[in-house]
Length: 456
Ligand SMILES: [Zn+2]
Image (tube, rainbow, N blue to C red; front, side, top):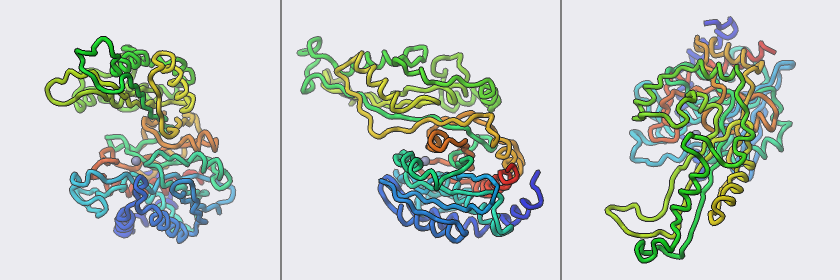
């Protein structure tokens, strides 16, 4: 371990507080905070304000059109950089309840893991950051760099207000970089850092021809079939070589740099194991494209479901009158959700004007931080100091997080440094956090602030 003397005192303190810190995690996740159902949000936001106030942070509970943002600031490290630590205090609904081995809001330890809704996504991960701050303050009386904690209450419902909030509170959030501890690490347990995320937008394509379902013999060949209309339309949107053929769809896609491609190439991959575990005989087209290149640098168009007509047992010779295709697009830098949705609408209007495109919400923009960022080195060193191993560097995360609020609105570099185990079962029954991951997270959080302060 490369930990310096100042940091090793903090690590010793974290070890000594093991029982206390674990108890506090248990207390924290016992409180439900389900944004989708507006359960417990106010209470948990209040708990956080109290927790940060006790650490000497200046606290702000900022209302939005939805659930409030919790902001805590400690800005007494003159001349040192300011890091914005982002997390979210809301959790997914726990359903289906009968698949939980222990109840979702009665935290239970089994096999070195704590099981509870929200323990990994994201309460355990941002509590680790907070306990790291507490430990640094306890041992050294001050923090090595300035810290702004931003905890959102609507991440699990798509962060609908974070962009407006960040735009309206730039002064409150003035920082040099943003770091988010969320999501799982690599399955090998190697720590992981991600330099951005793909965006997402969901939409439906709906079509209705007749005013009711009809007999496929009496009317077949006369009444148009909405499912065929959608199938033909979908066929114009992506070809069998895996290319998305919506007009202009790929125009804004940034080609990866050679450094980004090399980083993607260094990520461990056991393709046979991936195929075996998923029961696949092949990957999606185009076959020659590298695995991580697909996930980091390429947008997708996914048909989530195609619905209409009869799906029950046996046959039913019906000609349905309406159909719907539910789809999503994962966007990469520098695609824009509004622009892509507009292009989809224009494409549909050209190829199948009877079909309407409906999209609720605004989706989430992609985000990207350059792999040449000067903050890379201190973050890597923090992982080495805290966990004794170099992190894997993902040029982009595959899923969607609101990092664009930092990269595109605040104009700062944003990093995702997950502390969760790869099998954390986030969004699923029996969500869990390995207790060792929690403590590695606290150590890493402390080392991160130490290294950022040192880097100046
Ligand atoms: Zn989540």
